[in-house]
Image (cartoon, rainbow, N blue to C red):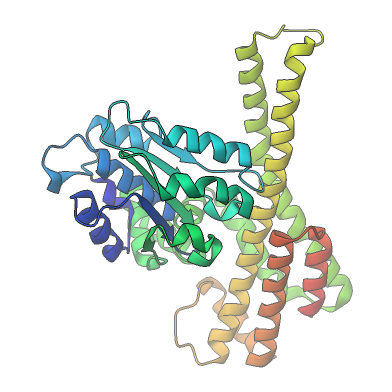
Length: 380
């Protein structure tokens, strides 16, 4: 199994990166763009593995079997740095550390590679810290930036990068990947891929977790019971609670493990107060965890609203004559009945309200509950 096998539904991208790994069109900076779930970071990781693959035959690079491929895919290779943030933004200090790392020659591989998975989560002044390093990299360094679209990266950066544009793969390809790689039953894989709207990561979570599938179905069914302002307020409260509980449950265990690991590294006493020299480092970890929690709740709520949006997307499809397949196929009868009670214009207005709420939650400091309550009132 080669490193390219995970890039389902991306034949043009695989061809482009294979050729570059073989030396045709290789450059020092790359920008991977595509909608969430298209596999931007997976494509960058596969490309990094192919570039540093141990195979002497350039046509076989990216074999997925050698030590270099396996350590890069596992993100443990000393010459390949992966950068992702679980906070709101990548900080200037983190960017400066990247520049310092990029200035070092590779210790054992052909290339030192820096993969920035959240290039869109850098403020302008932070991005400018990277500009010179990307503009004039050391001879054996390659930068790989990932973002939803070219517009999410400063023009001074993207003009110096070779673009790699990904698309959402067909649901059938995502389902096939879940079956072959994760051993998911075909019917569960098909339903998960369809419900995730081809987002590979979300499809895997839905396929593995029956509770996650039920939470999603509960979210999608909310509009069927929306009657009046009181119901709208209750729906908003439940949506925010679903998103918060899902994010919190995944964060608590990880936070505790991180704190225990830090205390063990510092040699902290098993009981009693911490020595003053250790308190600052523990406080820094706790602050980082709080910022991560804020982002994870925001991301979870955005996914919840995306699930809700799929209900109205299906309603619109039915109102326009069923030109494409439904996402929520198991709700076809209820969707048909709901679609008959309104018009495409009304459905589009409701979809706009959901997208407005998503934008407010992810790009401003508005309280999530207020944004969702305003949205819910527009759905009545």
